[in-house]
Image: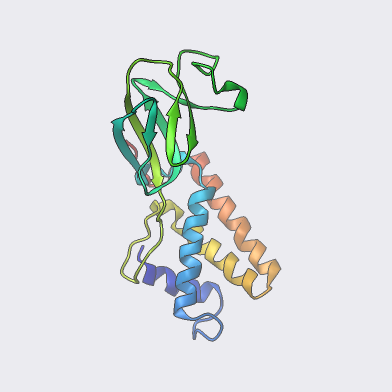
Length: 193
């Protein structure tokens, strides 16, 4: 769905068809903020269509993440899935304690791996930072199933800003309901690998 289509829907959702309370620019900002927040709220399984894949080598057990990384979805080190370190005490551990999978942690723009394996091939799955729409002709970058959630979240933000809290909460509850239904149904129009 185009940003212009979302703006048109939002002006009616906000009860402001003549843009008396919300300018076109404000609606665009509300929708872009909503896009980022819906992405952050959504579980990985309904975002697969926008997941990016990076491949590289770890040097001295470190891999520099792509500059557009917003959220890490998964990492393999060699042919094994790597697990995120859960506690400081596991820094020196070679594995996560459950099997031979390497452990990783994020620091200073780099992923550091435990020395669990001798291979250094890294496959990195992530969501990009930018899920915003620059112009009215820009498509919403989120999966189609999340477009209604973006619209409802923008409604929540708009009504929150003008202190119509009861109306705002109805829209927020609708956002959560849309995301929950997509997870339960497994139907986000998100495709997969």
